Image 1 (cartoon, rainbow, N blue to C red):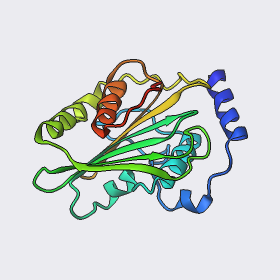
Image 2: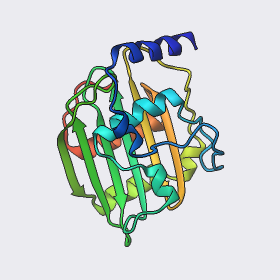
Image 3: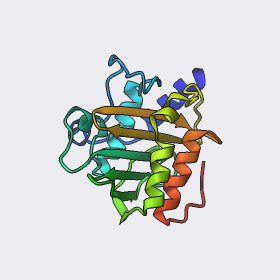
Image 4: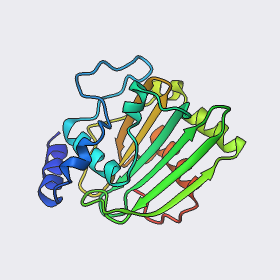
Length: 206
């Protein structure tokens, strides 16, 4: 717990302030007080993490999957997103939207800043439809049963690492899993799969 607190304080002291208007545009994550559905019995995103993650997602121009669960957008049945915030490397967000009929569209964004500091702006993007096999793999990995068996240790955090954040919005059901530098397990496995779909060469993985 002490290591986690020290890490949070260091990021607060060293990171430049994120534009408040950008953060308030969307509510990206549910408040701590909100009751979580049984399909997603995971620890909530803390207030500190909410501000940090929201600033990065806002800089990428990403939608709020949580708000979409409250008011579903037309033409998007479900969405899956991996947000990768490495302390000293470019933030990466990979989102997959499923359209009526089963077509899945990949939208990946790599920012120019750093995940533990100023996010910068969108530097490169990938937009493409997934193949039928890729879509099947995504559904399998992001299934509700996978979330039920996630063993995420939220007490593990450090100064030299990365936040791996997974979100799903299936109709009006929203779930989020958040882990610090996982070396194995479902968060790592899903994150690595989505990174592979972008075609980007990512040498520094932590």
